[in-house]
Image 1 (tube, rainbow, N blue to C red):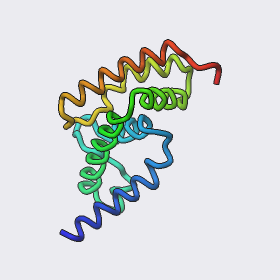
Image 2 (cartoon, rainbow, N blue to C red):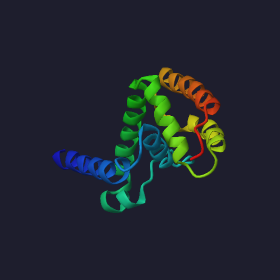
Image 3 (cartoon, one colour):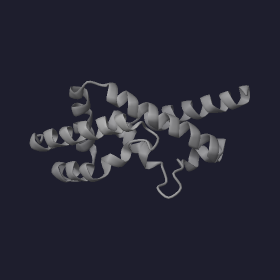
Length: 142
């Protein structure tokens, strides 16, 4: 049991320090973690971490981390969510408005699959409003 907890802690530390902390904000982290989930199997796959710790422990830790990042994002004030989403969209290659539309198409898939429906609905509602807002108020040329 203690060894299991130590491995869990090591994976979390490695994931956070090397992959999540360098990212710009909550939406960057949410998109990254959602991107690790294989659509066909539903498992979170991180080859570098799995090579060190094993696929199943990494799947469990990344799934839990995805849920935590998602919930923390929803706890943020909408103004902070707006700034974070705008920062994420601005950081992507391509035009700002194209990136807003791309987020409109894929960001719904960023919710963890086991989230309670009321949180997923809140996220979807917030996201739609925020994408409308930042799409109308485009920043000056980058």
